[in-house]
Image (cartoon, rainbow over all chains, first blue to last red; front, side):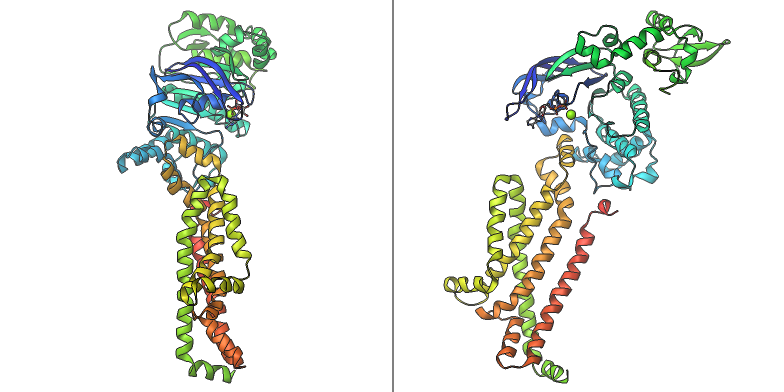
Length: 322
Length: 212
Ligand SMILES: Nc1ncnc2c1ncn2[C@@H]1O[C@H](COP(=O)(O)OP(=O)(O)O)[C@@H](O)[C@H]1O
Ligand SMILES: [Mg+2]
């Protein structure tokens, strides 16, 4: 758990980037920090690995104040994906990914093993990519390397600053999905800065919405949509999205099958593909499982968790998000 | 032409020793120039407030005509190779200093921040990120300094430090065009040769990932 306690940041030029912020980022969850440009998202994130230091207040990781921690050691224990990719152009993909393991002085074999494992994790064939240089990769591939480089030292916490904002919409969607799936397995504490509400709604377990150095509202994507705290939050989420959720809640599940998950190994409560999304939300709430199995003609044709349902509820037209 | 070849043969010993002196002067001047300008260039990237003034001072030295600079140094240091070396070093400083500074400052800030954020120390960032990425610039600076020094070292003869300038000067005094040529051609070849060799090294020094 990362906890901010009355953190204020004033830059030497007088800019107050954070104003008395107190909040908690839960362990093993992906928290999206969102807000308009210049609201202090990056500054907030950099506080966690001491790239910026608070003017007042304290930050705790698992209740230990980071204040007294050695900053180099701390940073090596936290994954970091910077706003502009920041791969080292003169190092091979392998050397880029193995950077933190090298700083941590892992044995050679272990480093190499780790690089291979991570490249495979994001669908980059180690045989092809290990010895390539960053500039020989596409934007999407570079960004994948940026993400796995942050995971290389097996940190508990990963900080990501608008990692996908420079990508084209298709790669972006793809990487969002990959990150989401990845998080299912790695269960890191991820702080994900973005200015894109669609992105936040899609990937976050919880959202911190900021404005002008302050926190406007925190909650799950659904809480934010159901109960926007004020006009700013409502506008930022988009009145359109909120209304859409209301009307589209009555649409039937079968219209959104392509937004759902194809495979799911665990138990899931069955629901007819004719049911409405509204109905599905209720059923999922009552069930102990994370997923609903969507059934048509006695066969399971897809699985849906609350995120999938939310996606369906927010889809502008049938199939657009697919 | 015949005349020229005769001169080369008859003055062989003198030409060779002047040639070696010339190389020695240029080489030592550039080596010391690197030893001073490279660390200084790195230091001023850490204290950027002082960068402009320091580069400015070396730039002023650069604009002093070379013969005049030799002239200023003689009353202070007397004649001999130290005087020539010091003058040459002063000329070698600026290109190396300026390129080292520009090369390091030019490294993309996000690359450095990524290194910092992943827990690299300042020394690690310098050695593993900044220097490798600035190396092509630094090498270009050394190349410029070398070519410059080889040229200006012809003036070393005026402070009694020898070099190919000796041959040229003697040839001029005795209206012996062949002798002038016997001094001037090696200087030109030296400059061109060093330039080519260093250009090749510069290419090799460019980090592989940056060649597209
Ligand atoms: N080093 C700095 N010096 C002065 N002001 C800064 C500095 N870094 C950021 N700021 C200011 O602090 C505010 C928040 O910046 P930032 O955290 O980068 O915003 P965001 O990431 O939300 O776009 C902005 O007004 C920005 O101009
Ligand atoms: Mg930012």
